[in-house]
Length: 242
Image (tube, rainbow, N blue to C red; front, top):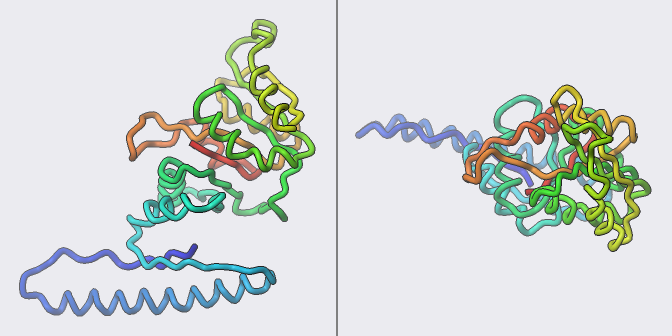
């Protein structure tokens, strides 16, 4: 999927033909730039020797998230490069995560996986609706993984945790042929995101599965703290679903 970004329309000024001609020229320039970039992308993809379909959309920057969410509804997954600090990638992630009904594979910008076969998967589990959706979306990956760890982060000391907490998801995964290990860990320094990343490093995980959370149920929501922290700091790919 390729988005050729069009310039925003200027505020209308009655009787100003110069402005109209100027925006038309900018549109032509943007489309020509899009044509050049489209050819570059197609040429690069052809090197992989596999069948490809490149979908191009000439849209305003503000419409990218909505268009991407719509297209993702008819796909198995939506793969994105992890946000680098700018706002647009965050908006795109939010739009797809909360508007598509499908999962996102968020890949680090530097260390990209050589394949989509993930052998060591960490599942961040808190028995919420969002984490349930993430596990369901991740099932094709979980079934072929060599090692699956279900991690539950709690504020309680390990000795005070109920022994049955998390057993249900472990049993559910077993029904699907996934032999998972359950780990109940205490939150470090009050930061769940850091705790999950530490556990992923210890387990040498190459994929983290988690639910995408927001502070409200409104369409324009902010990503929750744990989701945001992992989105911007995880050295391994993330599978997120809402």
